[in-house]
Length: 432
Image 1: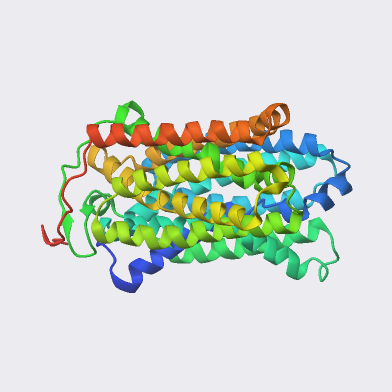
Image 2: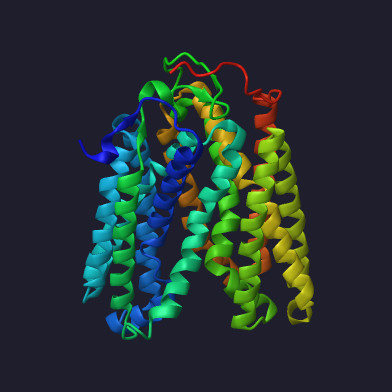
């Protein structure tokens, strides 16, 4: 039997558990890294004679395909197993990169881009459930904070690799994609050799720490797809993706058009934003784990995000007269505020799902993947249109309304499903 098909009959501890968790995060990084075309986009468009608008349409289609693939993949990993589905599709996504590198026409590139989005979506479907499997509740928010580094870190890694190797490899976009495919396939080998599947009885225990578990009845009590509270969790976090999608796609453009910031300084501001987000995510998620509280971090992060957005809208009203230092501070504050949310939200959502249907983590996270990607797609398509018609301040007011929706939904969740007192780690030692 292949190594990645072995099931763990006892819960791993110590370095072994951390290694398995790292492999799951590596898998997420690979799916986010493959297809990062921004560093070589200008070369690709010029070589294929493709207008930017048409590339945007192809990107929108691939986002939609990837969103649906992630949802379908989430249901499949619950049925077939996380690792059993992830590993072959990781290799397929590497091969899809190779296919894209050989594109000589717009039609071939479109087919390769959509195929890559399809297999990546399925490959990524098992990563969040695996983080849940190998991260006990006492450290789950921080584990999911590291998980978030996969997507953001992929952007930095792709840009760095291109900067270091573009001239060495002939200055072509094809060479960069061949390198990307090689790195992806090598990473897939590492994941396949390292990652293991928890046996269903082990996975069905609610793990408080490495050694302490709280038993639950392994019968199904309802699918997340038919659970109003699960949908509320998904709707809350997806509302924030309107802002995140905007900043990821148009952060530099917003700064340039609304405030007259030069391209290099705009990129530096966005680097500060993402850096603050990553550092705050780790630190505040660790604090959330120590307190075993999620709601206070979600509410504080949401309220601070709203305040930072209001400050940014006020700065946009000043136009080119806005103080550069104030702009930097607002973006750093916004990054910290959003960093307080992701890890605690993922931990709270995973804990709720394992209480209602312990074998449906893939389905639940697949639903979240689908809805959040649709919101990102809406941001990508609608933001520039509203900004052209009424200015970037108008669009930021829309994202501010989405943050208010997030806060309202978190308050609703707290009333409907209030946090219990922090669980102790001595309820029951594992028997196996």
